[in-house]
Image (cartoon, rainbow, N blue to C red; front, side):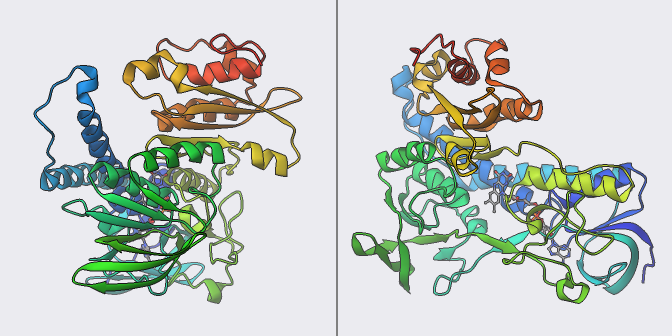
Amino acid sequence: MRRMDADVAVIGGGPGGYVCAIRAGQLGLRTIIIEPDKLGGECLNYGCIPSKSLITVSKLVDRLKEAEKFGLKTDGVSLDYVQMQKWKSEVVSKLVSGVEALLKGNHVTIIKGSAEILTKDRIAVTTQSGREEIPTRSIVIATGTEPIQLQGLERDGQVVIGSKEALELTSAPKRLLVVGGGAIGLEFACMYQKFGSQVTVVELMAQLLPGSDPEVVRVVQKKLEARGAKVFLGSKVTSLTKSSGVAKVELETPVGPISIIADKVLVSVGRRPRTAGMNIAGLGIKTDQRGFILASQRMMTNVDGVYAIGDVSGPPLLAHKASKQGIVAAECIAGLPSAADWRAMPDAIFTDPEVASVGITEAKAAEAGVEVKRTRFQFSALGRALSTGETEGFVKVVSRAKDGLVVGVQIVGPDASNLISEVALAMEMGATVEDIALTVHPHPTLSEALMEAAESASGSPIHQMKI
Ligand code: FAD
């Protein structure tokens, strides 16, 4: 049995936990990280990275299919799924081993096992060689989330699958039903559509990507449907029966009951916090109604010395948010005056076209009683977008009417996921639309769309008519 006192025990090796452990190690804290699965958590192994690797291939396939438009002759495109999966796994492995090297390089002790919290200064870890108790000065809960299972739609890994299985398929299902039109469901819908699946999406709410700007969502839905997908909003699955490897699914929709036959049903209806073994009740750790752990701006729970970061501490469920919180937690444990006080938390959805946003939408501004101005610039009027043949979508800038402060930006269009970082920086710096409009943007680039929308907001548009 190993005996080791820790300054900080990080439970979970995802982007929240491993970043926290690295920072804690850098700050000279005796740090252990406990992870039963692969380092990197959901994001590196079953989420962000493998999904974006496959999405990249699907985009390439799609672009090659329209190659003739650009004068490029190909002899047809065929996809080797086995090679694609191999490549994806190599990308993941490279990143996972990078995380391990960084942890070791920062003197973090990695324990492959599952942790339980006994008291606020003692954990138990179960490994292949047994169970051991470890005293620790502080604990960081970074155990993430797990998919919500719907009754009647339980995953069997074959016909009814979750995102994890959807990343491992070795061919595109002929008919794919996606239950849940949130970010994860739609990324898979767009991807498998490009691989040739006939896609149907069922969403309970009145719009896809609930919570996103409806104008933005319309662009994504239009493209999905233009490629042949069927989208049922305000609809739900009422029953699912399986026979001979296919599912017969009954839907209740605003236009009446509908039957769908699907080769795969991807259920992506949200995630719930993974807190088994965290002794939430025993320690009296406060959670919200859905069980997400409540943490302060210093990422500490209501129990002194016990911290919670990342997805387990509630939405938005984003890897970069988890990592930032991990840094704050480590610094607070080390006695530094850190706090989660960022103004802007960007998010990106890798649909076709991509969606990215930061700050608030017009609707949220109205709810908050903030008078705003809203300006847009369409990619179809931008030289760079035309020259790459990706002209769908727009940049929308929401600014405070009284002084032009940028309070939110929504982008739907090419490379939205990269473009949003400029806005996050601008918002962190308290920029106004004039600041962005006066910043010279290189030509021809997609970033000019943001400048143009900001120029409109500050009353000096060049490439669109003044309104
Ligand atoms: P996790 O990454 O979930 O890590 C938690 C870790 O804790 C796991 O490795 C788990 O094994 C471990 N653990 C659990 N219980 C115990 C225990 N008792 N003892 C020890 N360890 C334990 N986010 C983005 O920002 N961008 C994206 O493009 C994106 N794409 C996604 C695509 C998919 C398909 C999915 C599913 C998610 C995606 N996400 C994306 C979300 C992202 O993966 C999460 O926000 C992120 O992984 C959260 O990090 P975390 O450290 O809080 O938790």
